[in-house]
Image 1: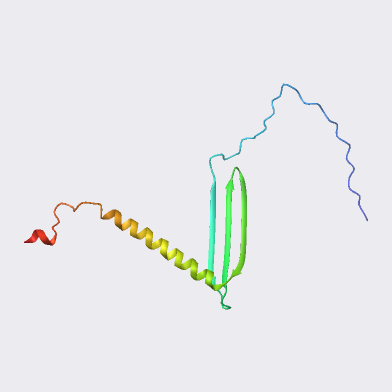
Image 2: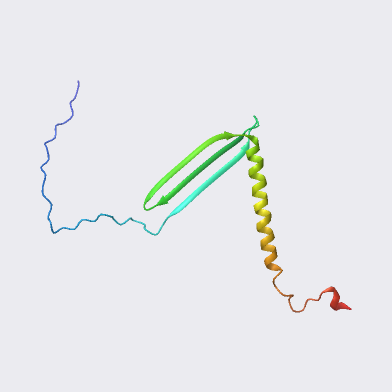
Length: 116
């Protein structure tokens, strides 16, 4: 048996009270809480191509957005990315170790020249 949807009565329009203020920009439930999560993955597949995968999730102004993609690139891209990340790591490690060279010698420690 075929059932027809229930018929609704047309609603009546009412005029709004002119003294009621409208809020154009409603307050978000968490105005000070935002976060972003990003995940990147690169690996060389059995076919010699670079397999690239990325996922990004972002919560901003009470809205959550998710974005993901997956694809293939030439093998040179993986090698170039690894060289760049190793270079950045070496530069940061060098900078950190240089900060320790600014400290004066600690009291009670002797250098080789002082032992004579």
